[in-house]
Image 1 (tube, rainbow, N blue to C red):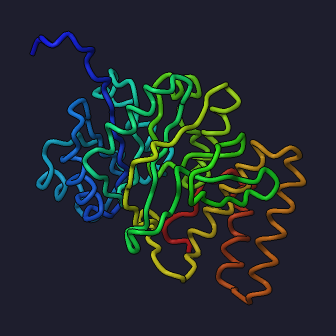
Image 2 (image 1 turned 180 degrees about the vertical axis):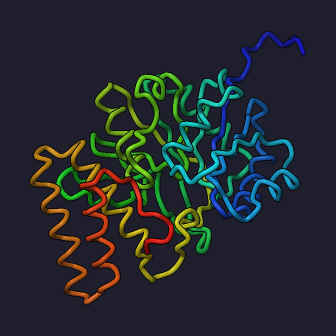
Image 3 (image 1 turned 90 degrees about the horizontal axis):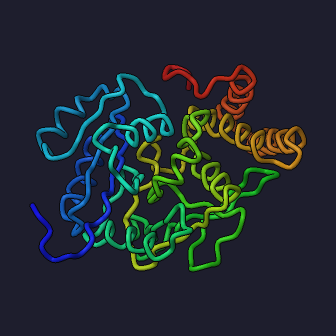
Length: 302
């Protein structure tokens, strides 16, 4: 349809969701995206080899979305890159990487794009995330800060100036296409976790700024992709965090060998003191897999 108003068309926004055996969460997220008041929005669901008939359920409930099947669990970074490089996202000016265990109020997409348009130097724009189980509590104000010595990271829970070690959590992150292309997407050496901190640090080094759309209010369950929503440690997750943390430090620490040694010592000591034998074995497995250049344990390793 011809634009008779004379106003510039809204930039195309491609929202990327990654699904793995959690179609109920993804369906709820899609229901919230269907209500967005930003018409120039395309939603691409990347399925990471689900075995619970996710795609059949999702296509039946939300046939308007675009679906891409990886065929195997490629991890978060590879799946996000696959979604952003989908042919139907080729014209997108912005990518919105959004966890599938979130629900977004109708104005969210517009607020993120408006924040990016207001700050041409912002390569990544975050949102304010609230805990789905406790909707009045801020889970992350855009993101957080990460240590380049220990890989320890914490979320911001109030407005704050974003510094060189700040990152936007990819639970919700709008990324400018120019930034994505310049950095060649997310680093696929991370199966899950630390990919957001890695991307934002690289964006900072490339001269981009980070920003937060302060009026957003996304509800985030957290833990949906890793299947943990309780206090019990998940051994497979412990292994993945160990691999990703060591990979992050090797890429960004001032003295990588020393930082990795401190990271390993801290994780082992804590689990020895707690007498948490399964977690200790999982961390040791992560160290082994990292040395062998494995991104994640196989599903039967837990």
